[in-house]
Length: 349
Image (cartoon, rainbow, N blue to C red; front, side, top):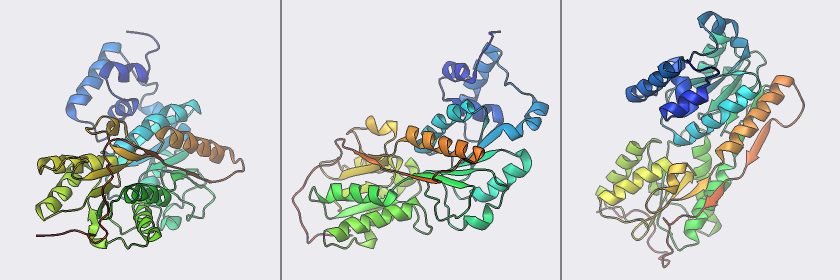
């Protein structure tokens, strides 16, 4: 047995991230069986044991921070999670990752976690802040919304770090408009809540309006934030006479799913259809062609979120909400075209 083996050693040996090791140790969902076996094999090889048993875990919950992650398939949220863990542990606090379904209520999950574990703080990855004032009636522990602007939740214990989603979406749409595209499709999630997707949609509308155009609502394609859902939605449109010259996908994962559907229908990117994504995940750098995207800096979001967590724990004064700017990363998936202002919208056969 090796001495001073850490979770980082286990992650390196198993070829996974530390959040994956944490999920296996905590018995959380979202890790396939093959990956679990690799992690368990590394644990057995090194003789690793977490620095607590069940009794110690119960006694030390007050030294923990829980991170509630909506969904298990978001590569972007996973990248933030990877950055959060060492920063939270650097505060002398234990890191607890808790995964919920895409459609679950994260505020209800927060109440349950606090009742069971008495954590000192909560960090939310994904979800919505609409109507959360009554739901987050927890003792005065800091609740940090990472990637969501929570300034509408007027509670002293609520903090947030987010990009300006509306401005970022405006920039992505304007990037396409400036290159002659008018017949633009937008691939995004449901527009039934006050969430980043709704703000990104408004950014699209703003960009069209700034040039004297109206964005046709029928050009909005709703899909889930997964490769398979985006692929299916794009495939359905292509089977129904899709003739847009560009697609703005509200996540890189969606863009990659759409790219696969376009290829299956004999459409090349960007020669036939230009494509721009959102998030700036590492995979976007390796697509063919390399994906143009609006990059959110996962490391900065994690850093700012933990800084707000520390401020909330100490009661120090300062701003509760931080707004960051996204950065457009120009790849090779967008090409300029001649403007045809008379062809706007889908053309269904």
